[in-house]
Image (cartoon, rainbow, N blue to C red):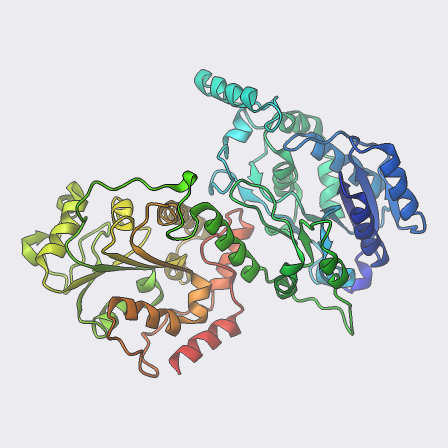
Length: 566
């Protein structure tokens, strides 16, 4: 489909900084989009009139005839979006796509790039839509309960009543039924839908029933369109085209001038939330379009990793920096274990022969999965391990802590073993708070054996959802303020891009005498050809892969592996 055949409409929700919002509307309109602006009814009329005057010269800009008083987490945001979208589609019936943005959303690339990108797959809806039952990623809980309880009170202004109402409904066992044919999904408020899908949502015969249900749900702007898109869409790309990140309390990060370089590298079309004083960003973006439109997809991985580290720093603080909210409690143990030991998580999924390879690299006893579900995989797989420790799972699971401490105490050399989300998780806190432990984790590596699996995709998705939940729970432990172990965590695609550097660093920590891996001395890697496709298929099925990182293009994975071998 040619870019000229895509006709883009933009819904702009505005409630503050209308001068900035007017500038954003001008960018969209001058880029060729039809814009319809909804201004919160709480905004004074004189500010609205100033915005109308500022945009009076643009024929592509219109204002919503109906204005709603919008509250955070309330259905009024959905109603404002519905009415503005209905007006835009009625005024411009030839539109093919509609983009929802706010007055603080800054276009980073020329609008023509977005139009060309949409033209490459014109029937695809770009909306983050994650099944509420599979992955709990919302900040502050109330994941499934946002659909099964009633939320008549404002969370910000009437927090006491909100909490008491939730507690009362839990005690009474209240459980709302979803309307027939709906499976609740969550996702970013900001989306880009085809006009066909959006019309189907707005004209759905069951819309009154849907609206009544979501009116008393919590934060329906993150679930209404995300749920109904699953009902009407032909193809869903479960990812928002707007770069929007949130802190540990669920508040959006603001973008300042010093974020410019990272925003440039992200290659995203739109970013939120722009600080009104960011003159540097306003002057820098959107980038100028030169030559043919750029249809390359967004690459927000580095920016997202930076934000993740920022959140962790904000929550955990700097090592050795104490303050009232983080003052640690002294442990009662006089040492958890008697000697240092190391745990490698995910490496055996990436390198099938990792255990034997590692044994040749270090002066230590390298075991398999000591906490595996089927047997205790001692080195060499004996039935009885060091110190007459049984390899029987039932014996080990009766006292996992005693099992590990006995093994470390009885063995003359350092103990190293493999671990993963399939294993017994009973020792997560024990190892994380043990100063003798050294944990090297590659998150999402459990996906590697699933790439070539002959299982039906439904089974692969179910297993992925379970393993992801288990690993997320473990990562919550590893991010705790009580962690005393040495912990290194890498996501799968980051590791695949530079395996030699990460392995070298891990081996130096395990063995300070390690001088670096000889050229070409890396274990064979599992075939990664199907990884990007698997991640995309899981995402589009409603499961949000959170631990594997941003799937690298195959040539970048191959380059990382080739550089490691050299």
